[in-house]
Image (cartoon, rainbow, N blue to C red):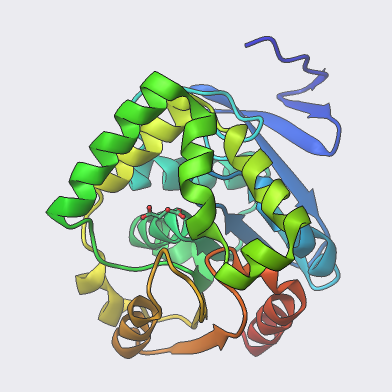
Length: 280
Ligand code: MLT
């Protein structure tokens, strides 16, 4: 794919991202810190760069690992449907390749939250704690499914830039959009860099994802649910519904933040994660 790899065993290094052969593609990821492994999974149509302030701010308390899902960031694009199970299996393979056998804390934002729930469903024994960030448990309504098809067609015809343009107003709180041009630009750049294969793979995977609601009462580990009060993409009600259904869950609602709450309020977000890790 035109990448320049420096290959050492099956791990390759370039800039601060590392790359490793996972299943049928080259996956890139970022990693910092030591301690309990903390796997953070990005949402649609984003990449591991959304976790920059977590890589820096949580490295003292955890081994923070942030993959670029297939087709995102610097991970190779692969065509096909990216089911949430497939993405969860990619993350598990990354942990295997890093020889991480002990239980990990898994957190995911939005689509990353769907992948987190799939990861728990598939590999409950590997999970020490869950973080469900700006996400929901329910599957797509017929209307949402029709929108996935429309957006896929748009990605195919107009490319990633058009998708970034369409998603940007929903990614950040209305106030952030006006007051924080640097963050706006950063979010836009991240989305524009996602491959068309990645965008379509995600959309088709999200469209067909199962309803995770029946699993929620069976989650028997501590779960932190975090949501921005100004999230216009996924309503706070979804977070409250998950909190009611998951027995060992705590809910933290964050003021002045939208969908990308970890970027909009990094200090508050990181403090919540630190406290959660200490409680495990
Ligand atoms: C995300 O932010 O990951 C997605 O927009 C979630 C979704 O579309 O369901």
